[in-house]
Length: 369
Image 1 (cartoon, one colour):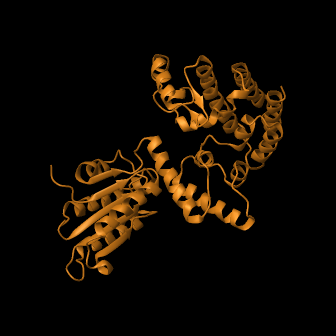
Image 2 (cartoon, one colour):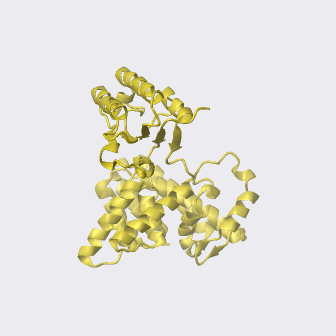
Image 3 (cartoon, helix red, strand yellow):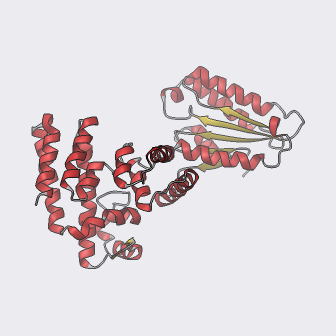
C-alpha cells in the first residue's frame, strides 16, 4: 500500500477536530525555515456551491504555489463543512468540486508540500470519505471511548481553570459536562463565564451557582430540577421547576431525565443492598462494579450501548455521584418514585395545559413523605 500523501482529520465535534489538526499543523511546521511564506491556512467553510468552488480554488492555488525561497510548504485546509450530509454537501456542484479535490490530493508532490485537511461534520458514507480513510493518514478525532473523551475534556477544563485562577472540584466538573452534554467548546466558554462572574463578585463556585449560571445544552441528564429532586430539598425542587418552566413549556424531557436517573439508582440500590457493589468515601468501587457486571451479564444481553436500563454501561464516576443520596433512600422509595413518574406522565396527557402544576404536585407527593 502506498504511503499516505496527506493527513485527514474529521469528526462530529469541530472542537476536537480543530484541536487535533492544529497539533498536526504545528508539528509539520517545526522544521520550516520560511515560516512567513511556507505556511498557509485555507478556510473550508462553505454555505453554498459557489463558496465550495471558491475554497477548493484557494486550496488548489495554495498547494500548487511553491514557497518563496523554494522550501517545503505546509498547507492546512481547515474547517471543511461541505463533506457533511447537508443541502450544500449533496449538491451536484459540490460533488464535482469534491472530485476535483480528490484529483488535487492524488497529484500532490509530498517533497514540496505537506497537506492537512480537517472537516466537521462529515458523511462517512460518501465515496470520498471512504477513499480518504484508505489513502490518507486518517484520524477520527472523537472516536475514543466515552471515558477517554471525558478524561481529555477534564484535563482541558483543569488547564483552563488554572489559567484563569479558579478551581472546580471533580463533582462540579462532572455536573458541567452533564449540563453541556460533553460539548468541549461550550465547556471552556462556560468556565470563562464562571471565572468572569466570580471575579466580579468574589464568590466561590458552588453547585448552586453552577446550576444557576450554566444552561443545559442538548439532551443531557443534568436538569437542575433533577438535581434538586434527589437532594430531597422540597423548596429547591419546587423553585427549580418554576425556573424550568419559565424558559421551557414541555415537561417530557425533564420527566424522562428523572426516570432515567431513577432507573440507574434502583439498580445501584439493589446491588449495594446485596453487597455486590461497594461504596466508599471516594465513590463507587470500580472493581466491584466490574465483578457485578460479569455476574449479571446474561440479564443484560443485547444492551451493550450506553443506556439507563443497564447500569454497567455507565461511567463509574458518574454513577458514584448519582449514588450519593442512596443512603437516605430505600429501594421502596425509589420504586415509589418510579410509580409517581408514571402517574405524572398520565396526568400530563390528560392535563397538557397544566404541566407545571402536574410536576409540582408530583414533587410534593414524593418529597413530603
